[in-house]
Image (cartoon, rainbow, N blue to C red; front, side, top):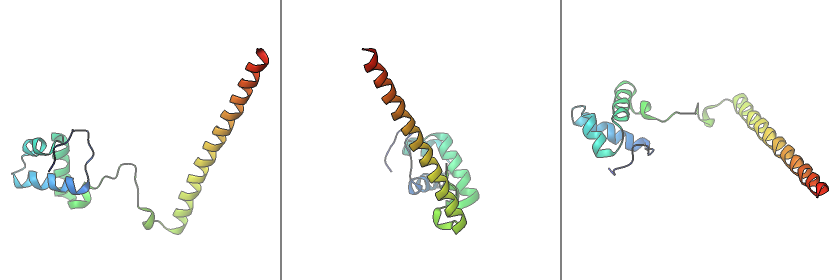
Length: 112
């Protein structure tokens, strides 16, 4: 396993290997930390999650809910609607910004 900075992201496979290394070495989180270049806390947390939930516990679920494939048709439509509303808000902001910019340029030209 490659050494890495502590803030670097890890793949699921790398987390599995790190946990297995810690478990094979009698829960030596310090050794796993040094060998794999991740924090002690991460090794400890991953090991506890792996022990309790298996590989499923090591999945990175930050900011994610169910995969789109698992959503019902109604939930997919709601998600699409939400994305379109956000896109519409962005485009409206962009349009307002462009109008304001044109107004400021015109005002600047009229001033000089």
